Image (cartoon, rainbow, N blue to C red):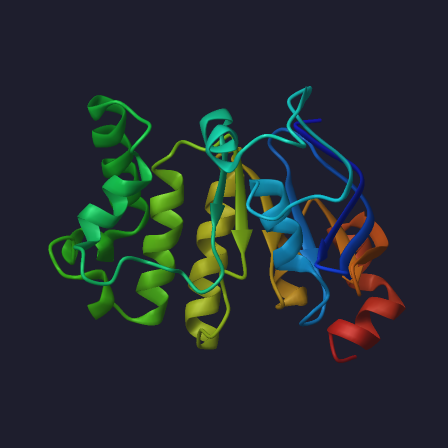
Length: 234
């Protein structure tokens, strides 16, 4: 397993946010996490990327205990998060936003990654000299994903990539996710669009009020009656 989480807990002050989280992500897998607003999905991703303190449990990445590792070390190890809400640097150009994702990489690696990102997202190449704040919501999401990929992640944490997008743009974003999966990128995907997130997943987990309540393959959870009723509107 590339990522193994055992008994992880986290809190905001005295308020528990996560409790007893056990999950794993294998190399080359796409694992999805679904759950309602406030279930703790983003908190879990923040704990994995090192910006949310862990109050109990262990996190191992490629066999190394990184429970107490700083966020900067985790990025160096290859754990890269694409944040909820895109969080692009609006005044900077599209290309400068992408370059920021490669700050740990050599110029040659950055140039090679840039061409790969432009091939994946042609609209970013067309708008590379425009300020990121001038892009549409869907284009900003592509930019946020591209910026994360510029870091050459071993594990890509995707937080709500379809949030706030029109249905057609959601389809485009998930087409990009499927392309990354086909390229054997290891992905841990969090998204409120349970149907799309489960359909693309090798394996998946369901999070409710800070605890994992269901686990299985994406296909199995799509057919689970509890999931259908709570998250698929069936």
